[in-house]
Amino acid sequence: MPPSSAPPPEAPPAAPVRVGRAVWLSAATMASRVLGLVRDQLFAVLIGANRFSDAFVVAFRIPNLLRDLFAEGALSSAFVPTFAEAQRNAGRDAAYRLANAVVALVLLVVGTLTLLGFAFSDAIVGAIAPGLRDPALASLLTKVMMPFLLLVSLSAVAMGMLNAQSRFTAPALAPALFNVGSIAVGLGIWAAGWPPQKAVVGWSVGTMVGGALQLVVQWPSLRALGYRARPALRRADLDDPRLRRIGRLMGMAVVGLSATQVNILVNTFFASRVEAAATWLNYAFRLMQLPLGVFGVAIATVAGAGVAQRAAAKDMASVRATMASALRLVAFLNVPSAVGLAILARPIISMIYEHGRFGAGDTDATAQALLFYALGLYAYSAVKVLAPAFYALDEARVPVLGSVVGMVSNVALNAALFPVLGFRGVALGTSLAAAANFAVLALAWRRRHGALGGAGVIPQLGRVLLASCALAAAAWASERALALSLPGRGLGAQLAVGLGPVLAGGLAYLAAARALGIAELGELLAAVRHRGAARGGR
Image 1 (tube, one colour):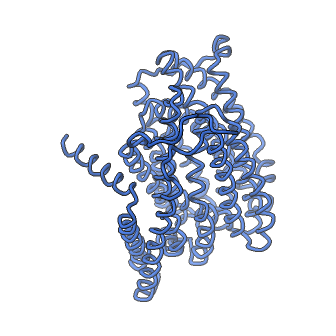
Image 2 (image 1 turned 60 degrees about the vertical axis):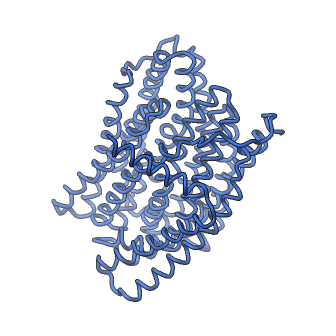
Image 3 (image 1 turned 90 degrees about the vertical axis):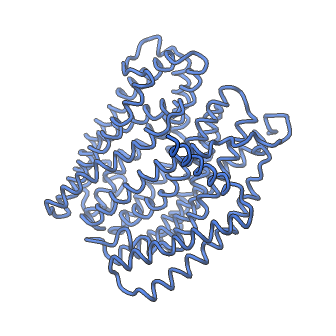
């Protein structure tokens, strides 16, 4: 299919993605991710990696998968562009009426799913994790945490309304409050000295507390924008073409995202066959998600809002420029992150998790999983940018196709790699499947919309890879030197061997990026200076 826009590629508008806003959003997200690491550290100390932690990982996966499928995934992809279009073309009151109709549907549909999950928790656990050592505990924890699905679904609607109106701070901070709630309950468990089998139940209650805080923190910003929660579903709402559009886009998104959820279920199915493997893979994936969340999701959020607004205005030149800018930023930030995680997996995991009931063997296993997960970080991040753009352009079939290709690849790769690599094959299969998904989206974008503003995404990626080689060399050399000079597993040695190479690698990358003339370095530094000057002038 030829590109849909006739004009040849031209220089994009200046800074199509507001780098300063992305930096601020990344900082807010970084706070949440750091708190998330603290939460995971506390979980490792209290429970470790064993059948109890596996039971929690599997139990939390059930509402979490449904959240990704119906709330923060499909609902956000469908709701944000439709809400933005309603506000632009029909006014804020019409947009808020639409939002209240969506809230009513969430209460009805997601509330029903929550009740079903509670009623059939035994069967669900048995189906997704047949090798689990303690299925009864996992079923109990599932019952405790199922209402989390409803809380985060409502939170996703609030996030969508705020992001669509370019209010990014409260949604970015909301996950931090989730972590704060979990940490507060976890500290209480630690003070009480509960054994792992009891601590894991208390931790599940803390998850619920965090989910409630995640919703509550966004309410003041919504009220300040004039929103009033009056969930209702009238006949006129059901006939609203915008609500029908959300339903149609959600249906396509659910099909597309269900492929991702099938991947996770397949991973869980295989991992449950090895005790503690579900926990090792979960910790490794969480570390891979740190740069994905801090950089990839932050850039995707800002770019997604810009694409939704420009798509509503039918400005395809700006859409392409926005996408090109976002993909360059993703490469500049996440490719070196992936290289750093692969090179420094073991010292980083030892520094963060190897305390309390989490031992050296758990560190080695988690590091092996992280190495393979890191291979897919750029693909994951790029999909986060590309997929919402297709939904905003009402081209939902493309991300659906990409997800299906990724799902089929993941199932085949897991079946082939698990007998050879064990749980490590699950991580490698996940990364290769993400690359397949990204390839489908990138090729489809080029066929439908042409080059991304003639902005040199691929040449920039080549320069980023060269700069990342400098990072790898500096990080590896400094890690080896510190490990030899600071033997032992004390906290001081862990901090030095974990943080020192990160600093050395980061400095080497920045120096190489400057030498190679990577423009995103200058943009980010200018954005940081501008943000600092603006705050200093207040």
